[in-house]
Length: 260
Image (cartoon, rainbow, N blue to C red; front, top):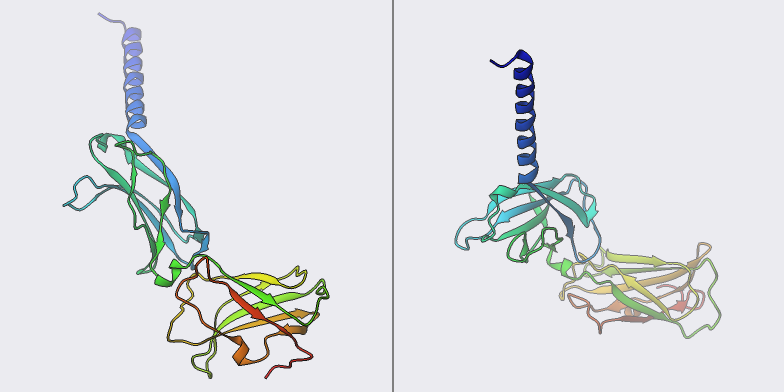
């Protein structure tokens, strides 16, 4: 007959053994996938945007994908954003195919989504990887800034140290409702020619609309140079910028060429 002490020791050992087995089993079955959801460049998201990343079993082409895990980022303020998906390793088969999907929504509106397959885990795919998304706004395909250049044939003098360039692309289709569609400012100007870049993402350019480029160089609250007439400000843009497209304009001294 075993003594009470022997039974106590044996019981403690058994409890420890079971606890260790449970811990090892839990640790061994839990996997983690990490990465970033990325747009073509860094982009601010509207307040309340939600980023969702899912791990999917996409083995069967003629069947709906099975979700194995997800990570939801509430109130995401910008892309890229990091994600971490926990999944059950025991549910993974080496012969199956798994991929990541990501979307960004504002309420019921889909803003960004991946349009390419991002495989993970099996068949030589990495365990951790980023997910690239595209915008559902067709105009967001233009993610490259629109380059421009300003010249002036009226002065070789350097600009004042506090001079600032202000550039605006204005939709003037309806003269009564001029709409600024994109704009930028630039300081630390050394002289002409002046190069600048207009943000172009999300800019709705229509071949059926008319546009003007407004440019002013100011210092100490005074306009030094501008484009004085509507005729000289008129410009035409395609739907997307490309390597060959550059806006080239002349600006004129405001004291010699007053605005219309």
